Amino acid sequence: MEYAAITHEVHDGNGKLTIGDVVHSEMHPYTGPDGSTTTLRDSLFSTVPGSPAYVAVADKHDVRLPQYGMKWSLEGRNAIQADYKIAHTETR
Image (cartoon, rainbow, N blue to C red; front, side):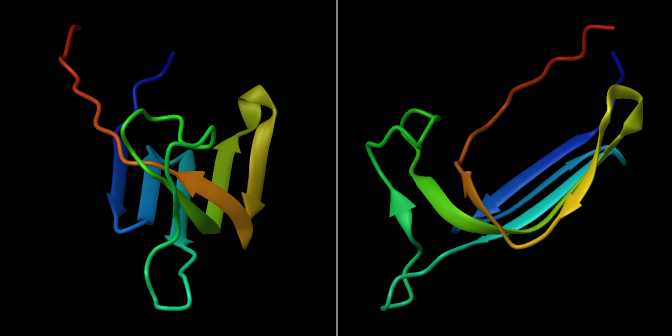
């Protein structure tokens, strides 16, 4: 186990996830003909109850954990994300 700062932001389907210096992902949502953000509601793809699933493009997805056989850098892949909040209390 390792400790790392986690930052997760989602605003209108634009999202960013950073975990220390080992994971960094950025994505933007697909939009409809009228410019509105594309979402899936009441769907299997929304794994966070009560949140829409934002259908998105992963602009960047970098993982650097070679000690676990996980090291890659991808761009332009399909992605799905949701709104969520994690409450954490330090217990060291």
